[in-house]
Image 1 (cartoon, rainbow, N blue to C red):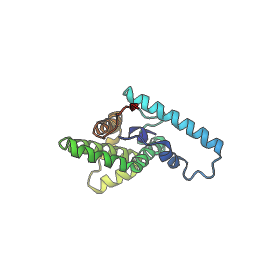
Image 2 (cartoon, rainbow, N blue to C red; image 1 turned 30 degrees about the horizontal axis):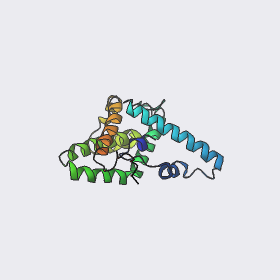
Image 3 (cartoon, rainbow, N blue to C red; image 1 turned 120 degrees about the horizontal axis):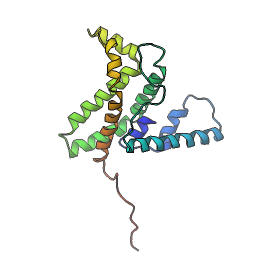
Image 4 (cartoon, rainbow, N blue to C red; image 1 turned 90 degrees about the horizontal axis):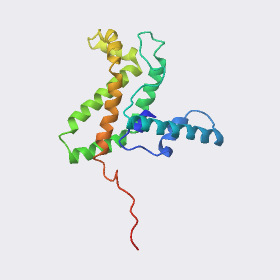
Length: 182
């Protein structure tokens, strides 16, 4: 839900709901209705939090060097990255608009987004990140992860801020309905 609510253009539920129920087996209509209501309430809550600039991880999402205690964080970040990947076309479309209207802002926003996604990927699978860092000659990453994790709220805010900046360059985002005269 974080990835969906943070997208430059928030997709309609008929786009993202299949991602949630995929692989869940047969779900009855009543269950789908309840799940949809719950997810829409969660989306509304996330949007309100973002409006109020409250960026936090869900309860239980923390990082420690203990391999078993970061499971909630890893699952949440895997979901965030999956959502971002599913919305890659939305992000690409937004990049095109800013490239046409404000090309000087593009490199910094792209660097910032890349930083956020690297951080999310690192904590989604820290063991893989540690192994890859060792292979690149950076054996210190493992010891630095708890310190790096302290900046995680800042990365969440940055991710949302990037999308917010991109929204301003997408046409027709803030058009109001006007009744046409007869």
